[in-house]
Length: 380
Ligand code: ADP
Ligand code: MG
Image 1 (tube, helix red, strand yellow):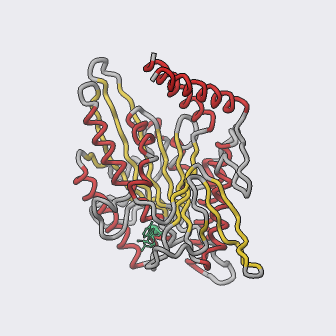
Image 2 (tube, rainbow, N blue to C red):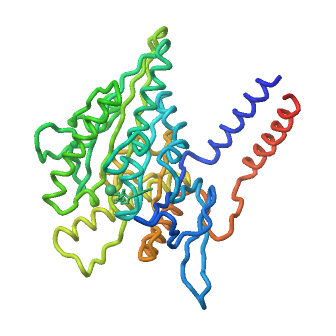
Image 3 (cartoon, rainbow, N blue to C red):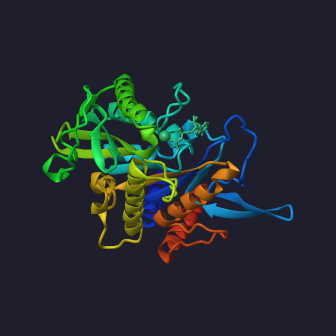
């Protein structure tokens, strides 16, 4: 009785998730530096909505509320932020492709979410490290039935050029993105693909990647905020009894800063960078929006970023976007444009009123779940 109802409940829940689509948008607001108790322009942080102070009229705050799949306020820990992405990590071992993005203006906390702060501790490690730790942990749990090989690539896209961050000698070699179906699921076959078997291996690689990124950063005036970095984990599983194999991967992407650059004020290299960033972020927005709207043509080919991620966006793949907001009043303009981007890529409506946009089908499933829950309570 009880088990069966529970199972049914779970099945319906999964079905509902599928109907809602495989694209989720989470919002994270970082604290004001050095002032953890000052909310800045942020108000009413709820589980799935947040308000910004848009203006002040006659001493009264004019607020606007935005809704997401999930909101993490300034006091959310790295662990809390990661906990909701755990099911995605699990699905990589089941053979799914997953993309997790950090989006936002420079200084809004993208690198904090993905990599963590400079002084890493058990508590402060970011999504990247936690994802790999989970992959090792879960694959170990399954080792009686499936053998997993896990390997890692780390790439940088700067001015529409792909570079290997796991190179052991300095090189400016530009890498080609190829059709992964000819390459065993590997998109950039010329980049180092490094097998890993422990979190210590992963930390070493992340350090190498960071170092390779830093080398170019000093030469080019904080290039890291103007390039995308992508940590890709490839997972290959072999079922021990049947010999069947499966393949999954996860891309963990720290995007270039989304701030708009006043074109009248920049020239030369800076202008070229700004144009490339604009192009790739809007190409990403276009791809996700067309997937969310289930359009038949998806414009993957408009940027290196979307080409690189092509077989992990859409289809059975799952996408999670962390949009980052700074609470400083000066950041308001950028925060609004970040929220507009989030609105474009999201299947949920962002707006003042929290409207229930569920389709009839979802509504029906919700009712069924409610009635199953009632049954469950009785069986208990
Ligand atoms: P970005 O990568 O978007 O440019 P960073 O992750 O480098 O931004 O964050 C900018 C600064 O704010 C860093 O000093 C970082 O440590 C700090 N910071 C960002 N998010 C948080 C947070 N959630 N909690 C505490 N400090 C944060
Ligand atoms: Mg950063």
